[in-house]
Amino acid sequence: MSRHHRILGVSVNATLRQIKRAYFQKAKLLHPDVNKSPKAMEEFVKLNMAYEALTNPKYTHPPIFRQRKTSKRKSQKSNEEKRREWIRQRNEELRKKAAKAAQAKKMRKQNIQLNYYNNIVVPAMTTLVSILFLIPSGISIISNFHLDADKPNYAAVLIGSVVLALGIFLSVSAVLFLYKKLFK
Image (cartoon, rainbow, N blue to C red; front, side):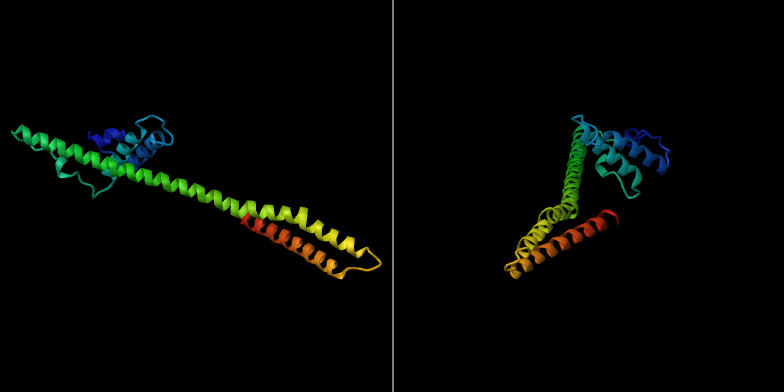
């Protein structure tokens, strides 16, 4: 049984479907967002490397992993050092990739919050301001100046009508926008 099979917990003759199932089950347990142990990231990187090695048909171990029987102890040591260096570089690449994915996830979450604010909160506040301020203000301006029987102030009535129309327009358009966004 190879090291990759041991990491995923599958037999050597496991099918691709069994390998994928084992990977996703282990990934749910070992993902750094779920697993809070200090070595969670390291374990997750090893899991990803094992999955990549078993599922990618073009994946081959670099030559430094192929052990040659030599009588020189020095050359064996240098091969082992090369192997460790390659593993360290590969782990570093996977850590960077995981950090980049985490950053992308954070950006998506911020975009969702911004979209929520722009698509829901702003129209709701516009509706609220229109209903609570603009419409009553327009009605108040019209009724106060229109009720003076001596000299009706037509400019004030016009301003009141514009404010009232603006309030009605904003509230109706914001409600329609909300309806369209919420009930697509």
